[in-house]
Length: 435
Image (cartoon, rainbow, N blue to C red):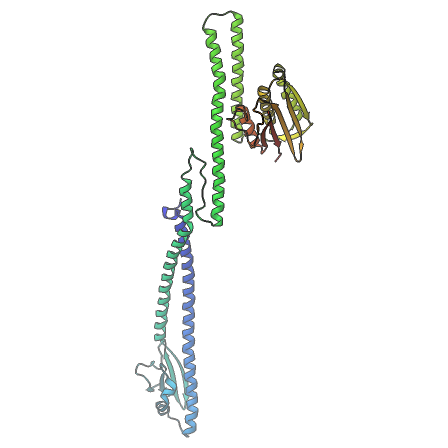
């Protein structure tokens, strides 16, 4: 784990930028130092060359003006200013390397010049004319400039770090503002909509993504809350009925036939409880992505089998089925289509008006398969409404836990589920998609 100062994105970006600038400044300073040293040597060599050429030219002119042996000391004294310039030192040396004359007291030593000097010599009549430039002063100037560059580099790094700290802080400030907005969302209120703290494309995209996530979490929390309400209601009803039957049976002595009737009613409520528990387990498995792999299933046979199971209830309520079913094979998790068909048919049979048809259609719809189940219900004249999703709390749009499970299965398999009511008829459409 990083130390606490390095956990800040602002601190890491600032330090990274400062480190990068330090490397750039160090590399630039070293390059300038090398270049300055090279220029200093080149300039010293150029000045020596100029002085050397001037001395040669002066010797030629002096020999033409004064025929005979040339006295270097006399010549230099007469034309010193033409040779020496500002910082060029002149020495006249004899054959024994004895210094006969020098232009400055602190001139370079001879015959072993100090490394602090750059020099050139010219032989004239057994004498030697030595021209020198003090390199030590150039080195001192070079060192001073180098330290000045180092100081400027340090100031540049410090200034860059401060600037980076301010700029990065300014750039990242929308994230802090966004974090404060996100803190307002909680498990009790996940419907908070975030507003972009800035109009930067990246921030707008991030806010849109977070809004989508919050909406998804809010929808799931709302669906879960509705599910708990429905589940508690569905479980309470058979439990209360079972408890009532048993209390009634125990309230006084009864004959075997009466006890048998109570036991049969209790068995029915117990079986209903078993079905509810199985439905809850199925819903848990779907929500936790534990469904098995897809297999090929015969959709028409599944519908026929579910109609056969519900046939006694259909006959008891004097209903009839109108089926238009194509013989279709489809890839789906085992049991999922069975659960959807059973719950939709059971709702249609239970809540349909008596002596009315239940319409069942199964056909191909482009690249998908469309299942439609319709039934009549008592409604206000002219009632027309359409919803994309079933509402488990609405008595008309849903009938308890069964529709909640259908919706969960549809979401888990990327199936589209739509409920439509029109003029006393309710139609549930499910589009199956293999993807």
